[in-house]
Image (cartoon, helix red, strand yellow):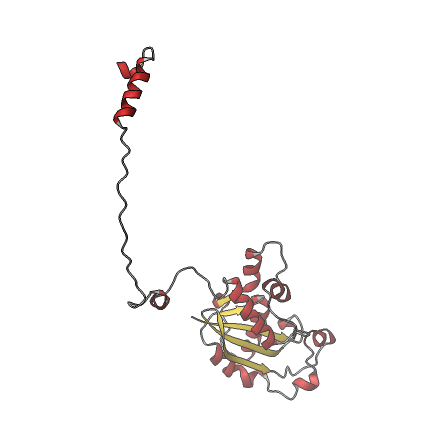
Amino acid sequence: MREIALDTETTGLNPKGGDRVVEIGCVEMINHVATDKTFHVYINPERDMPDGAFRVHGLSEEFLCKHAVFAKVADDFLDFIGDDPLVIHNVQFDIGFLNAELERLGKAKLDVARTIDTIPMARKKFPGAGASLDALCRRFGIDNSNRQLHGALLDAELLAEVYLELNGGRQTGLGLGETDLKEAAPSDDEIKIESRTKRELRVFAPSGEEQERHKVFVDTLTDALWKA
């Protein structure tokens, strides 16, 4: 099962108000485990970088203007994600920005139905606890010491690890697959049959002496049921 952990960085919070995507990071996962296949691009937003957004990710207008615009990277991005499920921390934010960019190019928007939001997953698993990416990294002991600033690829990599833990870690079930059963089964050389000596059957019937003593005892009883 192929899934894509995805994150973006932007110039702000409102894609309908002129804010743009400036970075996309994707990590391929197979059966919830990250592979070494990634997709990462910086994007020229064709506009200035507000101070608030710069303090979040550290991507300046001067740096980004040297990179391609979204129209130049859109097809490569869409080819990488294919039709596979998208795992996102706060789906509405990232999908809202990506769909605004795709709509500008006249391309089909990404279907929210194909997304998996890890925030409600975390809140359901840990009610009342923090559900930010940093909080989940601390909970699961995931090293996020390199996350001094937000970065799309780094955050996607951390998200892939968090998603794996939210699904139960590397051992997600107690069952063994066919391969595991074959590996667990002993070979013919390992099977040893030991002979055992049978024990003598135990006799639980009362002895003659015990029966006689019981009869004497019963005779001392008044209206005993045994005399009926």
